[in-house]
Length: 95
Image (cartoon, rainbow, N blue to C red; front, side, top):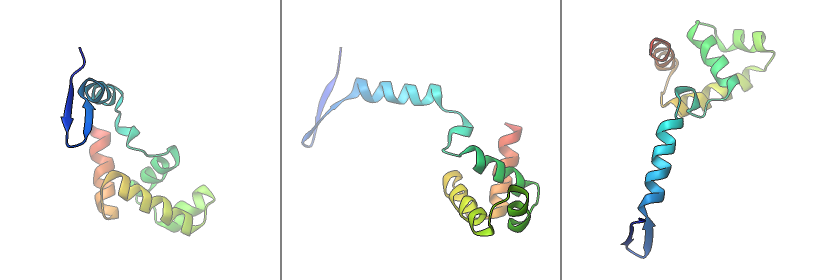
């Protein structure tokens, strides 16, 4: 049975909403927060204490590219600085 409710001018199929929510819960993994393999690699290096310059040299990237990766990484994991990102990684590794 499909439940449809009128909300303002939209009809909402709540069975579809429920299905999508269940799919997300079942398929959600910590690494699926939108982080690319490269971002995970850079996060590991940041957590190991490497500077942007050292990361750039190790991965054969420019410092600007590393800064862009780190900036995107911060927004994806919801942190604002390097120490919070390191804390996030250490907590994630323990869990």
